[in-house]
Image (cartoon, rainbow, N blue to C red):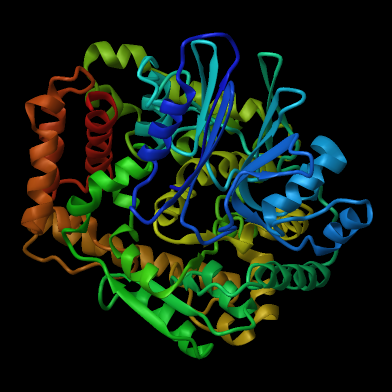
Length: 616
């Protein structure tokens, strides 16, 4: 993913900043057409690798006396009034883009400038007089940035691999991260697979001054329930969401929407005041694709269906692992094979990131409201430990490695929960999922998307999130207030079926539950038929994304890819896994005794990460 890299020497040493910075930039330049810019001043080096779409003007950008400079990747919105205030105070804007505005904002307000920014960004400001570096990201960490200290200097970069360009950095696997990945399918908190490399927490100001590094958090998901009427909330949500979408439409770039059969992406179409190109990827004849086409047609927008071929994961697995630093299961790289086709049509792709959780309460349940603080870690562990459960983990890992990681996944979950100060259990649960599952798993889709196009998420607009944080969880439960919002936003789109239930999105809650139940029963019957007939009766599941279980069994390229990697001597000799259990998993899957597509692809992901990041 394009972004920033940087080095700051905090002690006298022999490090060649210029040479290392060049390597860090190069390893993040995944396409020849990326733009690379660098700034070097004695002990510091900062680089920017970009698509050349947002803020294409050369960086760094300086203030009037060149005592401050900034490099930034990303964008901020809706600041014209603030800019006029700065001009009245004597600030001169020479470039007139986002980083130019932010630098003068910092010059005027100091660190408080962050509270005035609404956008998706990561930036670095160097104060030459103070010899002080600030590295800042947006409220939500929409653009990951990793950092580490090594041999008396600070390293940071938008990809983990940039830090590994320092050949003196010792690559030591973080066993806690491994335990978490195989329990939850993602890593928790701010860890990576490497000890001593962390992701910058969202809403952070990292300051390096007088050889000391400090990190302060300037914002968090603090729920403050207001108990307004449902009518007030639905009207206010519509007003703010329309404004959020409009903010992101006010430029001349070619824009499109990643449109699924869900509610989040159709909400963007409902709020848009211009025609957009829409993209839906999946398998031919899927319910997801059919619903998306109906939604696009209703808004008189052009929908492009991008078919996912059965061998796309083997073709793009290594690319997925490389771009996401091994932290995204290759099974979830749904759009990576069609990115070039999206890039041919648009500069910027809109996505309804996580509104199903923030507004829809998709992780809330009625039972959750009756639990107490003591119950929550066990409840959430049971809910999230869906990849390899405790019983499977005991058999998956070798005896020695299992003793190393035993219980660590649960300990990590409890530790992350203890960091959250929410008094309401339901709000605390959602807060946990936002800072972990969404940030460390779902947002990784944006990482590989940004390797080709820019990516905008109006669902993560500051004003929109602020109103959501005031809504009591009881109203968010079961999409209650979400459906009211959608009906007020566009009643025609609310009539179109929702892929998760198969019935109209605006149907009463009871009917939506019945729809979900019927869908679950149908899928279960299909799976049982496959299992008990050994695949002789196999009805394709076209309710959503590809039927990966069958692809692995039926597509010879996919099947051989799984076997060749997981049964290789290289994989089985690493000391992590019990080779007999992996062999049995593959046999059970191929013979329809179990469905292990997620688990097998997670194992492949981890092995490819090993080969790309530890062996090369």
